[in-house]
Structure formats: C-alpha cells, structure tokens
Length: 153
Length: 139
Image 1 (cartoon, each protein chain N blue to C red):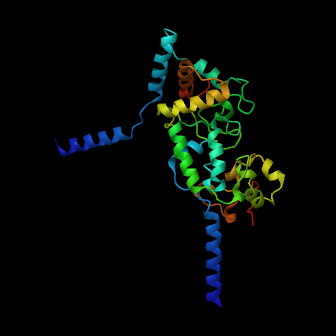
Image 2: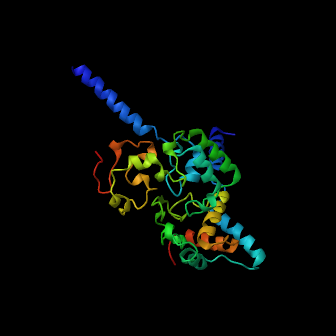
Image 3: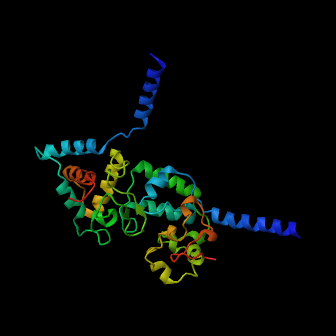
C-alpha cells in the first residue's frame, strides 16, 4: 500500500509539474529583449500563428503603444512565434489579446474583478503579479501568490 | 615577452572584447556633432534635457511624459504604466548598461519619441536628454 501511495504521489506531482511547465518560454534572446521590455516575454504557445502574424503587422500601434522593430528582427521573431504557436482554436482571439482567448478566460474564471483591479495587478497583461515564478517557466497553481499574499489552493 | 606581460595583454584583449561599444559621453558627443550642423555652437544642456524628460507632451493619454514610466528620478526604478512591469533605472550613474549601444538607444528614442512626443526627437534633444539622465538626479 505504501509503495502504491508513493507511486501515486510521484505520478500526481509530476503531472502537476508538467502542466505548470508546458508554458515555459522557449529560449530566444531576441524575443526576451525585444518583446520582454514592456511586458513579460509571453509564451508563444498562447496564441495561434494567425494571431501572431496579425499582431506583428501592427507593431506601430501595439495595444496603444509603439513597439516597432526593424525588418530583420520582425522576421526572426515571427518565425519563432510561428514555430511554437498554438494549433488549438481555444488559444485564438481576434483581438490578438491572450487574455481574450477561451483558454485564458476559462483558466481565470474563478477570479473576481477585485483581483484584476488590485494595485499590485492593475492589468491582465501583468502575469507575474500572481504567477510569481512565471519568468522562470513555472506557471503551476502551486506557485501562485495572490496579491494579498495567499496561496491559490 | 614575459609571461606576466602576455597575461596583461590577454586581459586587455578580453577586457576590450566585453567592453561596451559606446559610452554615454561618446553618444552625447555624436549627437552634439549632429546638432551642431543645424545649430552651430550647440552645447548639450542637462536643464533642457530635464524639461524634455518631465514635460507632459499631451500626445499620449496613457504616456504623457518620459517620467510616466521612467520615474521622476531617472536613478530610481520605473514601472510601465500599462503593464506594471518594472523598468531598470534609466540613469547610467546607477545602471552601467544604459546608453552603451547606439542601435539600442536609437531604437528606443525612435519608439518612445513617437509615442510620447508625437514625432522623432532631434539630435539636440537626444544629447540634452542623455546629459540630464547621466547626471543622476533632478537639477
């Protein structure tokens, strides 16, 4: 019985870890420097290739900000995004906002509006306000710290 | 050549290899030279740089001034006004990585001047701006 529980625990913890890890951002220095200055360098897995292509066409007005790249960097970054982009339509949004995808909405469905407007959060773009280890590739629920300091579980 | 001399030579070469391509002063000198062509006798001014930095340009509602995201004190950490991401201090007095790469400097002046000022910044404004943030404090 003890062995069984041990095996079960290992299986459970590794699957939870895998879940939290699958959104790790593939290593790409250009993505980090060019697209990780004003906001975290988001996982390319969180939008479809069509969404990324659309977004990269309008960087002079990127959600209200000027985020223009030179042509060569733009081509390299788009290739990176297309390589890792989601194929599932749950990760698609015609606004090109990750936070408007069905996947994001579902994952965050239990949150009240007061969390989003909290002074430490302020924007849905501010992942690391709660996913404090996200920039190290760890998005697991276990690592979440709510703005008031509580754990999520 | 003695072993010690060779060691020093190697250190020098390695050191030069990792040294930054530009410095704040070399960038100021470059922009000053460019500005002098339009305005003979141009000299960079930290006072004018501060007013560029602090001025509310009235172009962008969310980002009215440089200081909106970069903090009133360029030696302090800033915070992106939309995403809340922390921005490392702009002043080379406390952040040695700043103003050491012309291409990077041009890219950010390009983006942010259009965003905040509503047009490209002149070489004179860039020289003044770097002169101001290099001082490390408000005047």
